[in-house]
Amino acid sequence: MNNLKRFSFLTLLVAVCLSGCVSVTEPTAQANMSAEQVKTIPKSWIDADTGHKVVRLSEEDSSRSLYFHQNSYAASGDKMVISVDNPRGVAVVDLNTLKVKRIFEDPDVGILFMGPKGRDVYLTHIPSVNGQVVHPQNELQTPTKILAVNIDTGAVRDVATVARGKIHSINNDETLLIGAFAEQAHSLETGPRDKRFEARYEAKDADGNPLSFADAKEVRMDERLESRIPMQMFTVNIKTGEQKIIMKSTDWLNHIQFSPSDPELVMYSHEGPWHKVDRIWITDIHGKTPQKIHQRMMNMEIAGHEFFSFDGKHIFYDLQTPRGQDFWLASYNLETGERVWRHMERDEWSVHFNISRDGKLFAGDGGDDEMVAKAKDGKWIYLFESEPVKDVAGIHARNAKDLIKPAVLKSQKLVNMKDHDYRLEPNITFTPDGKWLVFRSNMHGPVHVYAVEIAKHAN
Image 1 (cartoon, one colour):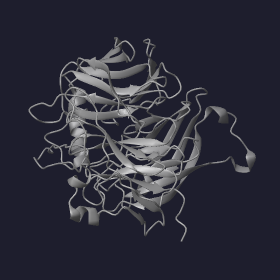
Image 2 (cartoon, rainbow, N blue to C red):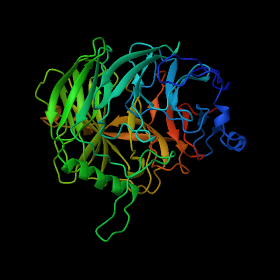
Image 3 (tube, rainbow, N blue to C red):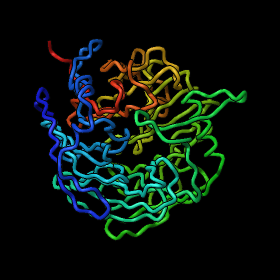
């Protein structure tokens, strides 16, 4: 990312022709922000507590970066896609100039991911229900159209229509989509979302008192798990539109991800309260017997928020032994079976972790005191380096090669998130050049997309 001191918030909008969409013909970004908001939301600053530069990448309120394991970057690393609102659509951030341009608008679209090899961003088009946007988190029971929009030209093409179900991922050669379908709807959410937050979960304890957001989410997830709704995992051929069922289950199938290196390898989760389910699994698109990635060893041990390394050789995940007490970033090598557990302090635990493309650095987006770690000072964007725990005096256990390799995460604070409400998850990602961490935040009120420079700002 070059020329980071120059900010040009370009809102020239590109017209697109697609039946049912809203054509983009004139600038709308600044019209969606009041003069007061423009004044009060800074474009850049040096974090007073960390000395790192933070920039606001988005121009419009209710702009969001993608979920932490969904690819938002063009293969060449020059552009990034974000979602925008009012009107709902897609914008592209040029990572060299920081110019932002809307390329598509439609009230019923949502971003899935950037294609890993081409220049298309893949979108869902889900018809509104009674004027309300249908969130992809819900068990979709209505037809979903998959669109592809070229991030350079704005050209739109139909990819496929899925009768029912949610698309989760795309394989590395852009030949297959993968998704899951539940035979009946079950929404985790209890009402319309606040635009500042990720979701709306509400539940009460045995005495009728409202639970916290985090605990209410656990209750709602457990209700969904215990419903034992029959599900199917399916692929969609991008060229032909053919759909093929590859798995049936009454477990809750979620968090489905194609390997970034193997076009036929799939990782997925048995969703639910993490201390109750064996969450992390892999299979292939031909019905291979699923393999469980992590075996629980104690009651209340949890593992989740799994993601691949960029070379596809490792699976990383949040591990706690037991839940809320001891915290690790664990990994499993798919080629050798080697396991590494990287220890961190309570305040360093993060809702999501991520890894740089070269595999040398990790990042975390922190968490508040209501979440699993009950952190006293956890509201930070973190950078981590992993340091192995070495044998004393070079003396090895006889079966050392078969044991888990311990390591320690050394943390560096990049952004103070004290004003961020963690009902919106920041979802950190490294830019392809490894110089910045991108995240979403409501720290200034409306949701925006920000980036923090990994190198410390020179005075």
